[in-house]
Image (cartoon, rainbow, N blue to C red; front, side, top):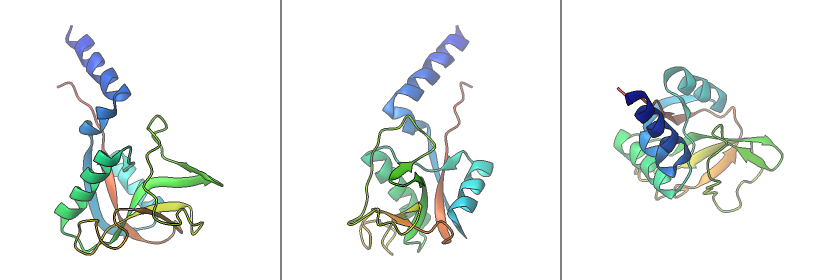
Length: 150
């Protein structure tokens, strides 16, 4: 019975938009290229963070604020996989996007979340997303999406 309950909870989490409640966000204050950041996140956590809705965006912005970093731009897990097609590794997610004005601008294939110097994501790029060259080095946000029935 315990195994059935666990499987039910897991299935509910996967198909529910509340699955983000299972995520723990980790701000990594190391400058890496997008590919290096993704590799780091996959090794230490689950992956670079992907943002499925405004609540998750707000949660991530709060994670950056709590880190008290002076980072004003951080990598997120969105990448241009072919012309005009922006993809995250979690294909079943809703297509929430928070592009800045005139974005994506064709400046690169990887996406950063812009934050103000006050770590609130309300200045500078106002929490908006911008495409840039993937070799640019920036801090980044990972998530840990492990699920346990213990």
